[in-house]
Image 1 (cartoon, protein in one colour):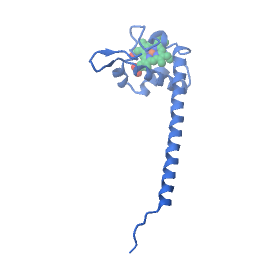
Image 2 (cartoon, protein in one colour):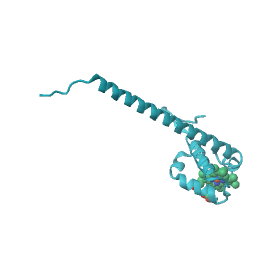
Image 3 (cartoon, protein in one colour):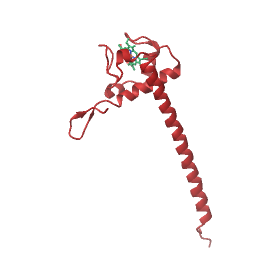
Image 4 (cartoon, protein in one colour):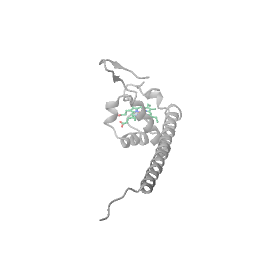
Amino acid sequence: MSSRRFNPMGKLALIAVLAALAEGLAAARGAADEAAAKRLARGKRLYNGAGACLACHGADGKPSVPDAPDLTDAAWQRKRSDADFAKALAEGKGTMPPFKGSAADIEALVAYVRSLAKRAPQADASGFSQRLE
Ligand code: HEC
């Protein structure tokens, strides 16, 4: 009767394969993180620069014109898709003029607008609202 024998080399090979996979995944993730950081930096540059978004939306996303939405409002942001934002930017919406830029510029701006909501007020353990800055 044959028994399944412990094969130390087989196990080592498996560990090596798994380690290589994990390393590959970590590298891919690092590259994705880097791409996301670059996109965010590009969005910030456009928001404060060529896009002139801060003129109406404020440097931190708090509106400076009455009819502009509060971009720091996470609950409001959740009701809007990235496609909604991209369309509003490309075509303009209400009194907001269209943004003349590439698709990558618009994608970067949407990513940056998303990052503004993350700094929305958060309730701390004591129940008071605290602004993270
Ligand atoms: C002249 C003022 C003005 C400028 C400049 C401006 N916005 Fe707006 N923005 C508005 C107003 C007003 C609205 C609300 C439009 C509405 O709902 O009628 C708005 C809406 C938005 C929305 C929400 C769109 C939605 O889905 O309802 C986003 C996101 C946004 N702006 C981002 C930006 C970005 C990024 C820029 C820079 C490229 C920018 N805005 C430039 C005034 C402005």
